[in-house]
Image (cartoon, rainbow, N blue to C red; front, side, top):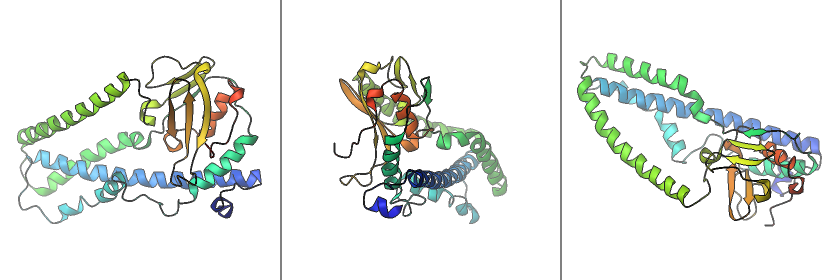
Length: 281
């Protein structure tokens, strides 16, 4: 299967093509779970350490050497956030090709979904872990402070926390102003965080960040995007092309449902938008 993908061709056998897509998604889910575990461990270690320092008043003199080890689990998470390293990065070089090439061929053979409301939700990712992460941070922070054997100085710690919170609030406020400016100018959403959930029904499309309903008459095309010769690192994504406005593109990894679900659901209401190749565009 990888040999066909390396040549830019899908597997001619639909069963083998479906197996290739399923294998890629299974490996992607495994790597994504590992990424979330590493980010979660980094979050707990970092914020647990901060909590311990807050309880101690923001300053610990003559800290034991093992306190440094508490920050080590945060290193993989920082590398992932900085896009320096990604779990399974080397193994996934052909995965987008395997998925997109074979999925395009399968879409040519697929039928529309039954007509009915379909909601494409956002893949929650690390957000789904908060019920575990929050108490874990509390436990790590409290136990770390108790192990330091220093008196609590919560008031001073809260003052330091408030100063940092003001700085971060200003930064977030500037970011929010930028997003509001884009929204006011009518710019399309730039990520799945802004665009999902997507509701597909008889009236048209509803995107989270766009007011009202996009009528079916405004939709000109729906395509599956992926790696091309010009952009070999491009992720698998779904593109909604709209009349009179920029297209909306959402990565497949950011959607809870497979990308073909969104495409086939639209076919139920717009059969004229049946699959067409986009590599040549």
